[in-house]
Length: 288
Ligand SMILES: [Zn+2]
Image (tube, rainbow, N blue to C red; front, top):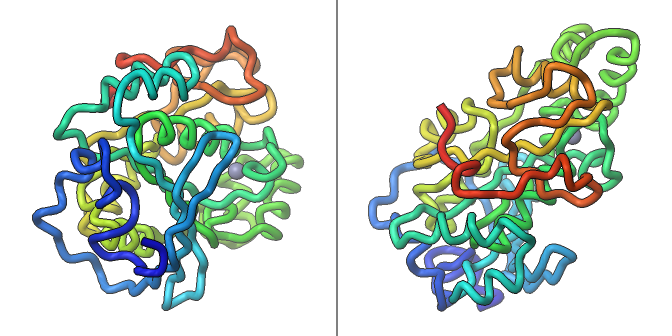
């Protein structure tokens, strides 16, 4: 129903028919979310290289930031899933298809260099591709959060931080040397969008445990953390190790640069088969 904005009748799955109703089942007890008004545009169709999605733009009224939700409904039957998804994803779809399973959600922070140009300095582009494939196969919603570039410092400052990293700093030290916060991202708008979509209880595709507590404080329950680790690369393994060691991200990285990651669900374009383990029910479970 384009033009009706959000509320109960639109957004991912809600009211869109086959397979969707069960994925959004935990909306009967909406909890208060800190006041952060967002306004929604119409729901439109968005056919992509990853499959067909429904997209909706949102404006954070207090900052003017424009965000995007990209949603897909779980396929109505398994044959559709198998036909539409890469090897391994059907197992994930099956594993997550329980009637009571909360919907998959990815909060993706904007990263121009990674998302658009496929930069190997970070893992953002590959995580975005992985999340979209997973959501297309299993149903769910990705919120693309603008204004989160460089963990909140902006594009120009991110490249200033890159220059410092080329001189030896790690990603945390570089921000500190610039006198900028290490991570100033704010998820209030994301929580407000989730609430508007009726997604009060979610399975969060993330390696960052901090997001779970931040969302909880904003009234969104994370029932499960679904890992989104993609294989590391020579160019980003130091960055990923800093995220693991200094920002508590749950990542299983190789000891030596260039070696393959182990046990990670890395279905991404441009990844060699031997470093691309299939997604299995074992790889998708909650991590300690
Ligand atoms: Zn990035």
